[in-house]
Image (tube, rainbow over all chains, first blue to last red; front, side, top):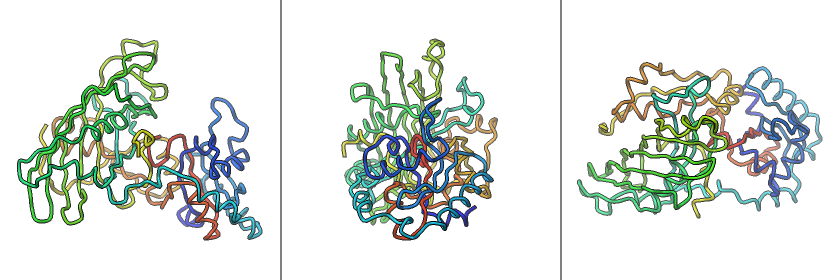
Length: 311
Length: 100
């Protein structure tokens, strides 16, 4: 399988934008996705998610949406055979397409290379009542980005043991609105600015050495959307530790845990159904981990609600 | 909540089940499975112990991490054209390597 995959340029991307967008990359996808496994499908949804192989000219090679390795291998082999049968001119992008693709602006282009990138992992805590089937092990991922100057704002100005700093309100509100969300079982919507009731995070220096500074975080958050079918809330206590590399001006360790309760639901996050009003608004335990990662674990994927960052 | 001093950490990670993972597994069926934390152990661990809580929340290494996925389709197409290779696109509702 690995050898087969190495014959391709692999890419992971969000399908909704590709399926509905008007940019050059979206139009390229729309030009071949109807030849794939979900071509023409409208029910139960019109999604075109799956695995596709195509040429750089936009020609369809093969596709599948499967969890079975054998089916995946067959698809990859079919794609390579179809690719080999093409003339070279059909395998590459036209100059016009290359130019158009170069103009597409993506959030990923704003990846803060010299800033702080945190992997955000959410999970139900033991004690959650409604954990059956796949819900039992459900978890989700997102990414939180901070520019270089914002990363420094997590630290007290003076590097002395005992120094404290209230992390700027704008940064903590960003965490609360766009990252302290109940997406464990599926995508959800962010909180509005006025729905943030508490957003406090303080850092305190624990240790100062020539090469690094260790800090401890503590804080609290509360966000509530009070009305309508998607009424919900998310309340946490924040605790964490981090190490700041003084020479390179970046965090080499950053572990911040938000542990607390969630209630209510949104359209796609698979919580209690509307008919079960009592269960819907019962508080259940949840936690979120913000963490620095490196190597193959680090992805240049934009935060799900990047549009709200205002960058 | 007690917070341990900065120290080396265990590699114990929890296996996450989601569609993205399953498709990734299909792509790399020979990848090793992550160690699984038994439920009773989790119940015992995740009280006020910060390191245990981090271990509980930290995602298991995913099979698809062994593939150098590009993050945007357009960039991959341009690269494929230059390298004269086909594109393998993994497309999902929500970015497959992010929030799905």
